[in-house]
Image 1 (cartoon, rainbow, N blue to C red):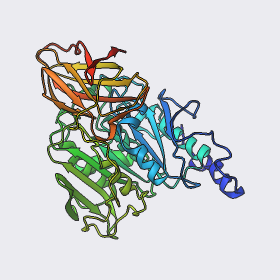
Image 2: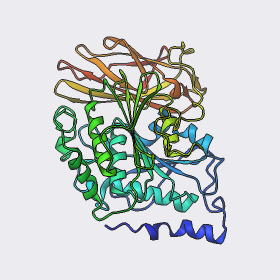
Image 3: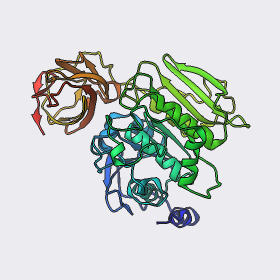
Length: 449
């Protein structure tokens, strides 16, 4: 399948020429997450949700925000800060939902041969169809399209930047792996993966060649890349950040030595790689002590600043300046995770465990089934004997075994009536991979989904 960018952009360009407003053609979305069906070619069988802020320019930027394994587009919408930033800066957010299975379930396909070839099919083609739909339906600016994601979504971010450098202008990959790291589906699950098992060490040129071969003959500009990883990540090992750096610096023909390093926030060590004009093409964040739990509060704002759609420009010419790509102000925070939650609330919990050898991941979706919003929550449950949490995401967990309490983080403290949020953790086990027998939210027992 070939990809003709000029043809796909025709309708949006025509709107600009004849002076029609996008509002006259789009559905009456009112700043809510909305599912879109029949958005175009969809070989990956994916679902698409879109968030369109009420206040936006005629040709808004587009951000594709992708969830981790076991998650969903709506879950990443409620569990990340991209929608609130869209309200502030007027860009549109696409939240794809992966549906393919590879050990964990609902992971973006970054392992198949089809997914490693431009126009080859599978999830990458589905994502590009979503972008084209938003360009056509909402007048999205084809010159301001960006990708970001967490874990499997971070892996898919690297995938999209490699396969479609003419579509995406920049990307921010949280806890990802280099493009073409996985050999096949059998290499994907932790516990058996060479890619995430610590056995992957290629030269910068080998990594760069993988990107160049994905779209052979392409000579146009490459998307700028921002990379994030926790130093204590054991699910997707921290050393893979260096492999990502080597891949993208080689693609840009940059030195492996950063032109500047700084600490924009406590525990955030940033390395920046710039070209001869001083433009930062690659920047990498090492988050001290963080496990498989990114993006943490405030990080999405740095990604949006790097893209240049928060008004700061995004392509600093002074890589030594610690504030040159910093957001103008941090996003508003919800109550901190340590604040005591209010009284009990009606709830429903869906819980999925994916286990291997001596490890497992558990993905939990909490739904407020009551008639009032929950502002601050604590989910309690008891882990089966022999299980011990090693890292988690979208909640703060304590203790790591026995009777556990998962408390909200700043960006998912509020659960509106009917609203859901997805959390999860990685754990070790000694043979018992069962789920907790029951859950309670703010002291009230939750129904099982």
